Each structure stands twice: as structure tokens, then as C-alpha cells.
Length: 380
Ligand code: ADP
Ligand code: MG
Image (cartoon, rainbow, N blue to C red; front, side, top):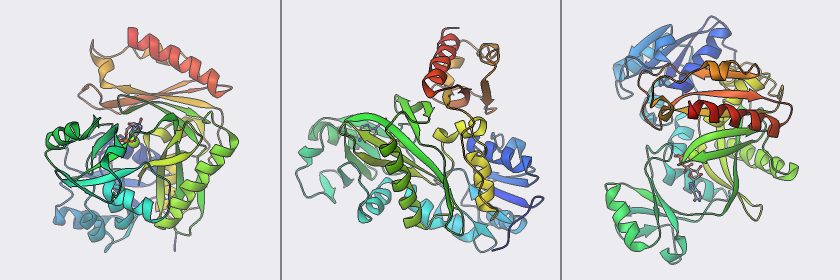
């Protein structure tokens, strides 16, 4: 494999904030970026060197992208596998169509994890009302559970908590009877994630384990390093590495875990791209997850991911805009805090508009500072 060197044109499927931060990392290293997205005013599209406004099913547009790029990546897991396959006729595409198609569908994701003996929460596949696949025990064993649509769910959307079969039937109809999984609710001590990068040569570099707190199904706060035992952290890194190896993955991958009250780690889901819980790395690590994405894509040596300092990332959701633009000076006057805004025009409740990262001497100290800033901007 020959490295793709700075100056080359890199292609990006998807124009959201993850793509914007990828483009920023690519630009910093001297690459050019072409973004393909159907939104003419997307966060990444606006800062790209070239922009192709098209759907992921537009074969002529994909051909244009493929012809002008040295390598192509994605920031969005719901890219049709056919689009990635078509692009791979022109140049390197990473992650590949197979990994993306497994991760983009909860049914294939769970079947992949189960088939490879990774520990996951008990679940059943529901494709038709009253019919459960992949589950031999009584469905009653999955209550209380969460019904999740198999595709296109994100940030807790496309999920319903159900306590019995009657509620399950109603919820399934409310989901328009699309294929779903019913997952048993597990007793959480906390949630952690591992973001890692695997190069085309199989070499892998992980970021430190992250502890994640969610609010209404949306990531709220990420704390690094996670406040878990050294043994748990080691296990999480090992399991995530095994997932990447099993997929023969190339690029940045996130594995989200539930840490159960009894200390067991089970995989919640995997994301074939940089992840919200890895945003701390921009300010807190020698190499960010977005630079690693560029490095893996371009066959460059992977960077060192050591932490400069413990850190806490806080998401800024559209809810904060209820009374107009928040007063950013409240964040910026804290000298060890870094503000990131994604340039989205409309601030809808629950929409990820930006984040800030606080560095501290310890994770707990960074958390205290972060929660203080969060309270101040929320009450302003
Ligand atoms: P999304 O794709 O929206 O991130 P997840 O499946 O990760 O969906 O669910 C979002 C959050 O909901 C999780 O991070 C966790 O806090 C909670 N959750 C999801 N499934 C379960 C479960 N089986 N048991 C307990 N909590 C869960
Ligand atoms: Mg999740």
C-alpha cells in the first residue's frame, strides 16, 4: 500500500458535524476535501474545498466523487452499501461496505456480535407483529425491555420502553411495523466506550476508555479517563480490539459498552466512524480521532493518542437556544475550556449544535468545572 500524501483530494460521504471535524483535521494536514451530501448548507459541505449536492443513491454523482478523489470515507453509517461498493471501483474506501452494512442495522449488528461470541444484552428480532426470531425462551424474559428500530435510529430516536406484550404490540405499530429488535433493559453501573483506529496493515491504536452519561437517550457528558477499574478498562480495550480485528476493520471505530452492576461488560452497539464520545480527543490528546481517520484513510502511520490531561466533554443541544443564542462568553472565560460549534443554522431541541471540552488535573476536577459551566449556561 502506498501512502496518500498531503495535497491529495479526500472524499467524504455525509456533511454533518463529524464530517466537518474530519475536514478540519484533513485541512490542517494539507489535504483537500470533497463532501457529498443532499443538504446544500451542511456543516461539512460549507467548509469543503468542493461540494457535491446529491443523494447517496445518485450513481452519476458518486462517479464524479470517485473520479476526483484519492480515497473516500464516511461520517454517517446509513450510507447504502451499494454506494460504497460503487466508489470502491475508483479508489480506496474505508470503512468498507461490509463493516458499514453490519453496523448500520441493529439486527445484523447483533447477529454479528452473537455469532462471534461477544457478550450482548438478550434480545429478539421482530419483523412481524407477534413473531419473534432468534429467541427460543419466553418473550416475557425480555421485559422490561426497549424496542428499537433496526435502522436509522440515533440519539435515542426510534426507541420505546415496553413492559409487557401488549405494550410491545402497540409500540411495534407505532414504529410503523418496521423490523425491530426488542432488547432486555440491563442494570447499568455506567456506560463506557472505546474509540480506536485500525490501519490497513491491521495495526491498531486505541484512545483511553471513555465514561459516558446519557440524558433521554442522547450523550450528555463524556469523562476521560473513565472512572472504572484498571481491569475493566483493559477488558473494554481488548474486546473493542477483537471487534475491529473480527471485522478486519479499517478506519475509526467506536464500541459502546454497558458496564453492568455485577462488573460485566456487554457491548451495546458499534459505530463505523468517529464518535461523539471521542470528541474530547481534539483538545485532550496528542492525535484526535479525526486526524486518525485521515491517517488510516491515507495509509499514514497512526498517531499517538496519549492524553495531555484528563478531560470532560459536554454536548450542547438545541434546547439551550430556547431563549436565543447562549452567551458563549460564559464558556470562553474559562481558560482551560475549548468551545466547538458546528455551524448549524436551526437549533431544534435535542439537536447536537456543538460541545465544549474542559481539561483538568483529574477527571473529577474536570467534571466539577464542566458541570459548573453547564449549569451557568443552562440557567442563563
Ligand atoms: P442510539 O443509537 O440512539 O445511541 P442506543 O441503543 O445506544 O441508541 O441507546 C441509547 C441509550 O439508551 C444508551 O446509551 C443507554 O443509556 C440507554 N439504553 C439503550 N439500551 C439499553 C438497555 N438494553 N438497557 C439499559 N439502557 C439502555
Ligand atoms: Mg448509542
